[in-house]
Image (cartoon, rainbow, N blue to C red; front, side):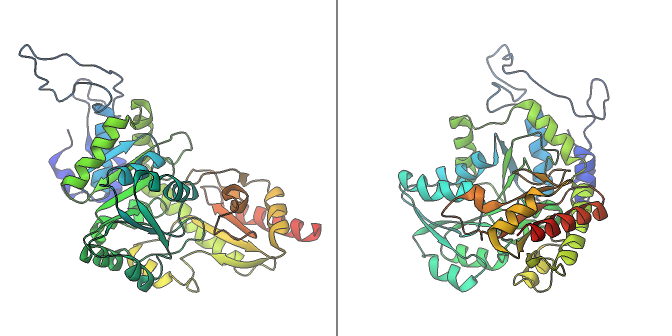
Length: 388
């Protein structure tokens, strides 16, 4: 298992060395892939090795969880088969009926699930602008609200919510605070240190970083009933990750810090450049000082503001779709956080009830040369303008 000195390592080192594990039999520096689904009992019918069946017990998965827990400064972490599985497990783990306060701006699929499926479990969900602390305080009901669920930065408008302040209000009311920190990553924000009880990531995105794994993770600040319930839901519903996916995630984590910092530096350059572009009406990026959440983001996102931004294109929906149609280097595709840069007209994906403006394009900045990325956006925007 990891060297004891790993307790003193910085996050970049923890990720790069995968907690410093050296495989004891071969002395390999690459973590092994364990595929077994069943394990031999001891003669007295016990499982002293700690593994009984592959659904809750896999050594590769546990290793990845240990790395993620260390990165989040968490008591423990649990991997799931997807980000949606991780997020929904937090809600399924609640006692029903519960009052839930959730961010108005968040990943659309989970927002849809909260609005349509959570009430079938007996919960009442209230969506609130979580960047407005007064609105959050008014929505959280002492003794009634059991869960506050926020996403910051909030996809795809990149709204910023004050984790520490919301944690204080939630805890005063007797509620748990869960934070979707997929965009910030542990490189820039550690929500548990700011008072959150649970942190969730779609590990398919930056944590893996190579667009070849579907995974989710929940990490807990401390042991307790809520954490045990989340783990129980995962095991009982079978919402587990496969060992090969866990191994790929471990591989991706080893370059997390370098990838995210490079992508974020490019995102800042692009955001700054597009803010002056003749065909861009508005740039949504918390790294810009004009962003309404910039001050809070600067306080809780240490070292960077993430690699996601959105632009609102002059000429409306038609111009935005035309700009996306004219890119040559950026890929028109869903998802985010990979090494390749993606562009997407989000309103087309999210549908009629989306809070996403029709003129908005979401950009996931990858690891390509910044000049190439900016040049491609410039020619695409100009081509769209000529076309209308």
